[in-house]
Length: 230
Ligand code: DC
Image (cartoon, rainbow, N blue to C red; front, top):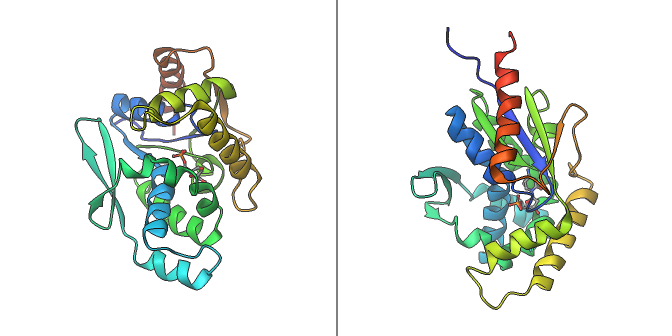
């Protein structure tokens, strides 16, 4: 008998380590991993590069019609890189220039409709782990396993700083904290699909957990759900 395939959603605050956990779970289960934040970041990069006026819906609509997003597996990272119109933008979407505008772009309903449609298509055959902010509430409300991740703000600031300082030695911890606070605020207060915990989500607070501990906890949940009869 072939094993039941499920959809696993991971939502939560910025820099909680959602992608790290999602990637590890997908690898272990042989599932596809999709970083939905990368899609919003790539759209933001396109808007910045093409000087799109975020208050002009016509411009936004036209721009979205010219955006093609795909993923290609990168064996070095053990995860998929995002491709924006044939260009691998996995590295540039992590820059501060994108980080400081992405919440604004992700709050635009047209942008969300565009991204959600593609995300739902990617989950059509199940066997997927997707991380983001609204995956368990809006994209896959019927997902079999929903995880809501959280961690203390200080630990999240520290983790993001360590990641960004490798690319930009001049960055300060204050800049990172400010950006994170601003994104937390915008992501949880926007009108369209704000970050919130799904009623049926399991909470994973990883403030005091190692990567291995959080992985084992989440994998245990996944195995338990997969073993349940259809
Ligand atoms: O997970 P991340 O930091 O790469 O996400 C980048 C931004 O995209 C974040 O500020 C919130 C937004 N986002 C969203 O609104 N919905 C998602 N499903 C994923 C990300």
